[in-house]
Length: 502
Image (cartoon, rainbow, N blue to C red; front, side):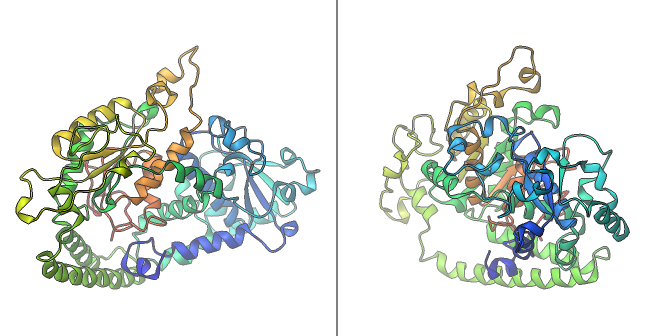
């Protein structure tokens, strides 16, 4: 997160400072004197789990306690029931076999006063902490009621009555949020982005495993659109969409200049920033300090982008871009006869595409009449979507790439909710399934535009983390969910329920 990113909108405002606050709280000078909140975990989907852990971490911070995961791993099922997580040399309880420890302190510190038995700690529920987030009096009363207990257990799944997760923002973050230029209604989304970034810091062993599988033939991320087609059991929570709708919106993003390598990108960004600046100047709803800061930041971005546009006009006549080169040559990859929209079915995922050098550019006069569009990085649990994407990419001059660490058709993830819960059904999970999820997130964060459904927690994780470690807070994101977008697709900041774009 560079200062340039912070000033020009590429990184979520104040996220670096927020991560430092979390780190300091999670790593006290003396663990024997700290107080603890131990999470019982959230045994559901990839994105949902990260979000709920983030809420619980925020509760601990709000109460002045260190947040730790429960060590028994009962809530983690297939993800940690693999050899990678059973390696005693690097083993950490629960999901921390993949991630950096949340804290230097341990469960032994948290359970010291109950004979080291973490299950001996008193249990509380999410709803029990409502009053602590309503006002200072409620917070003071809660802290005093817990003062005699060095550690407490938190049950996330049941009990405690109703509560509003959007209100569970730690008090230490309020000064950072209140002086930020971000939209007021997105405060909880800001915390989700920050907490998800802290929680999902991969450890060295995970980084090494990811590196071993990071071999997809993405030649230029500036023309890459990350597309997440969520099917499977998600149909009980949101309306599932056919691939054709994702494809239509992806082409629309490209044609409108919303992907950096597409021809109209600078114009689209200038129009977006100018509209945002005009709306900010006439806004009466925003806090005055936020409005002034937002205005200065928008003006800086407009000036920077205008300078880029002016220099690009003079450079275009002399420069041949990577995209020109790809348009001018046959991009034949090993194991396929197609030039664009290459099918991944016949490719060796682990490195074969790197042996396909580009042919030298023959000259501007040799450019073909058929244009090359961009690259789609596709995430999906549905093998039928893979087939449809390959066919569409070939027909419409898009390269389609995706991870292929295991056979999707045989896994539980492809099943609907009814199929998964049918009597006699046996769950099937590959040992690389969770690593595949992390790899998909990695490639998505490197992409430069996004087509997804924000009703999916996994899509929200992409949206949130592109704004922190991804450095893509000001890129275009198309939301296709009728549950979160009034009139899909929402591709402009003013249309979206939540947005980091300014």
